[in-house]
Length: 340
Ligand code: SIN
Image 1: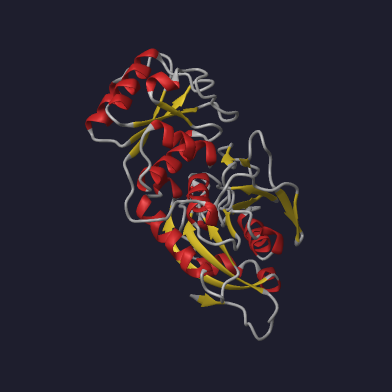
Image 2: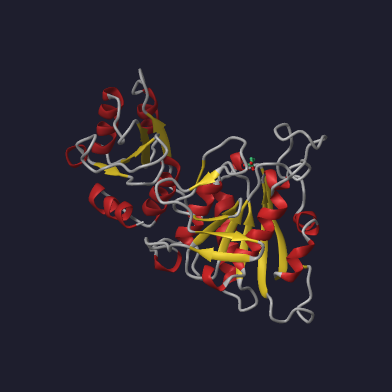
């Protein structure tokens, strides 16, 4: 851990740990006008912090390089490492909050995982960037400053894991990436952002309703049940579902059409899987809204679970955690999805 500001100089400032994992925020290209052909995760955390001198008037920062990955390659062992490190840091009286720098591609999955497994009410804030650190008008430095500002703000305590991006503050449960290039890529469809941060000011406009962090039954562990995602689309066959069941999958999330409706061939394959004890969760590929239980499919009869308003990727995170916690059967698992 590398402390970059002195506690004796700013004794009243919050102590924030910045954990870097890679991503475009730490990306570099040969040319400042190149915002798509760059290597993610090559700029170290000390360099990310050094270009934002204003951080030293917001918080005392302790920086750690947890990983240097393009978040498309995020994997469960790194999730375990990250969540365990955050829990250790937040259990200490020396740390008031954590900021995680991350790639945008799977940020919403990591954020939701942490929302369900961090065991503290101290702020945890994820941030990222759409443009590499080497780009003209790179968005990373301001996003980082805003994330630390949010993590140091008293009102962020008890709100679960937050995402600070492009001046907005989102709940980890709701936020999704919605653009391949725009700096306002992160949105919370249906419910909107929790609040905003600008020029050192933080304002929350609503609070998080569903349980998170200290109020969940989930603990991070080394074991991750095999859960995969399949999609329903015109002309889809049952091949993928049958292959997954043959491979011993514990759960399948289906990214259905519309209200989680599923092509007849895949629906039959999923019903067969459910009858063999595989947990089958219906979500939607649409991008906003929710999937009504017994709406587009006869969930009670088929043994399916509705993901509600979770997208397929977040539904997979919740299903993995629920299965790891011993959850079994559609009734118990539906309760988990209705709760979180
Ligand atoms: C990544 O997710 O690591 C690369 C893309 C990004 O951060 O925008």
